[in-house]
Structure formats: C-alpha cells, structure tokens
Image 1: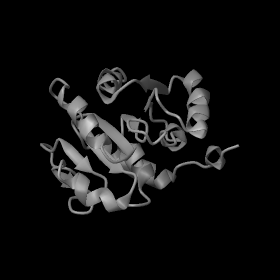
Image 2 (image 1 turned 45 degrees about the horizontal axis):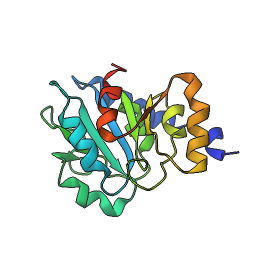
Image 3 (image 1 turned 90 degrees about the vertical axis):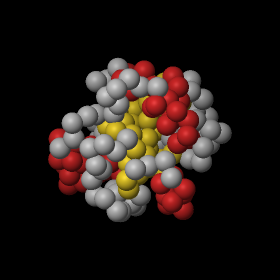
Length: 173
C-alpha cells in the first residue's frame, strides 16, 4: 500500500488557503509539483483561456527551480504573501505549504506527467478535496494505480497534453 493514503493535509493550512481563496475574485488553477519544461506548456494552455482567466498558481517540485520559474510569474509567495488582483501567475515558492496551496485551488493540475517523469502523486490533492487533472501518459506504476483508484470518485480527469488540460480545468467551475 501507499502510506500517503493514511495521511491527511494539515487542516490549518487548508483552512488558511480557503480564507485566501475567498478573498479572490477569480478561480485558481494550481499547477502542483511541476517539473522542468512543464510550466511553459501549462502557461501556453492557460493563455488560450478566455477572459477572465483564473489565477495560475505554479508550485515547482524542486526548490532549486523557484528562481527559474519566477521569470514567468508576476508575484511569489516569499515576496508577496498574496498576489495582486492583476497578477496572472503566482509562484508558490515555499516548502511545506502544499496543503495551503491545495486549500486555495479550485482545480489542481498535477505535474510530472507532461514530460518524461512518470507523473507525481495525486493523493494529497484528492485528500484535500481538490479535483485533479493528470496526464494520460503517467507511467509510474504507483501514480497510475492511484489514478485508477481515484477515477470512480469523479475527482480525476485525464489530459493528453497541457493544451487538452485547458478545457478540463474550466469544466469544474
């Protein structure tokens, strides 16, 4: 089994995320645990959204990539606790706050599957009650098995590409 099934996101952080979400006037798409190159694909798909676009919140998997990814964001959590209402992309550049980011998300696009990385784990997002989008190409046996367990709940959708994820994140609104 997977021990993550026995864990739940930190309730205080999820609640704090909900408070932040309520202060926004638009939806939030969380691009969680993204890997190198995935942010550009997701940003291109996000830019095809009609206005008003949701806030794109990107949380890279590895902290050494925070500065690199900051080049496509207008704000980042370590410098502006909350994004400006006009920000289009906000960078989640803190460690240990995934439950917070999940608490403010309307939908989470789980990284790792848009490249050749096999996909990241979606259990934490589902445990927080956030609908998830994962790539069809997830190859990690653990990730694929988890995704198949989540499918009956209606909390998971598959996308063949970042562009295909675009209409999926709108359909949960």
